[in-house]
Length: 246
Image (cartoon, rainbow, N blue to C red; front, side, top):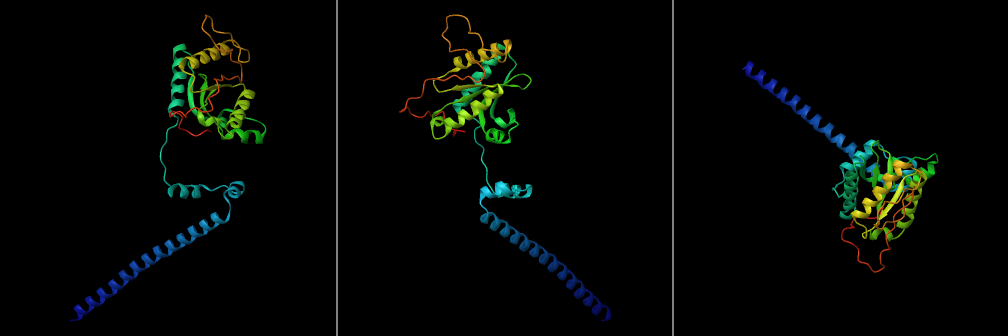
């Protein structure tokens, strides 16, 4: 009897200790969850109380806050280029390959990655702006930017944004080429030829006209652009031009 009673007492004590351990673990998790919920509520309250512009001008989001925002959001992939922009990319790549130039064509390049300025305000103005296509030499030097002027480029402040990009590139000695739906691969090939001739002679000198009787546009100089005829006012937007203007 004594042995049975001792076993019962031991079992009761063991069960009590085990139950207390489980209860303590769950209580700790519950307290941690409450603390996390309170922190999230305070964070959301601060985010609502401070306007987005004020937050960006005073204290940028920390790495942990950025991760929290990304983890709470959903993302979908989208095309890097519209079909029309991609058509000109392939046209430029083929023209470069045919002439064995060793250059490359990059897409959606930020001006802040290829331009610099001692003026912080000027740099911040162009830092986030992009060009549709950028031709770079074999050593990575920017040679020319190609901007597709679809229907969206003629809306709102798009002409001013394009002028800003063009002027910044011109001042840095990078050519700016504009193409429209009226242009084709032959136009791109002719401009690639002019850029190659200019690079072979002098980066700052006007290029010579290609020989022959084939009609050509004026030779390209630093900062010059090809301008196709202005799109008709009543023209229908091309279904190839699906990306918003930048």
